[in-house]
Image (cartoon, rainbow, N blue to C red):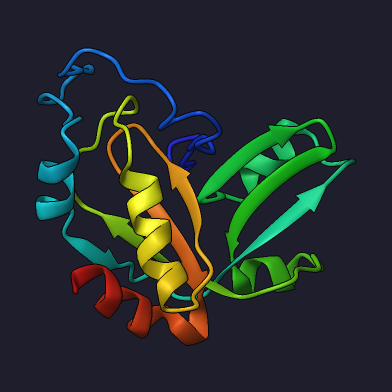
Amino acid sequence: LKHARFAFLPCSRHLHAMADGCEGPGSGAAIKDLPTLLATMSPELAEEGDVVFVTSTTMTLPESVALDPWMLFREEEGLTLILPKDRADSQGFSYDGVFRRITLKVHSSLEAVGLTAAVASCLKDANICANVVAAYHHDHVYVPATEADRALACLKG
């Protein structure tokens, strides 16, 4: 498990307004204030290259963790994993698109309101799809690999 990375999809992440500040183990306070988040989000294009979203209804949790996914999420329909494209190809997975990850380097609170909407709105205006994954420390935006540089420029904009 030492290389496994887990994140949770942001279903209702930005739907609740809570008190400011959120502390986690070994971290500083996460930011909830939207203007501060937007001013300091510092988007960076990740170096891991192309990734894909795959799914399996038969894979066990230990089998999926052994693939060292960037993200693993259990849905009613099966497991969803974000894997490096070459690893997915070598395992025979099918997928619908090829993506790159942009990480918002600001430590955003899981209770922050509006960050996902602002990022999605910016990318929508540029006609770029966005698949946002919220993790404990950062939000990660998966965009089509062919649009990654343009998406990054939009978010730095």
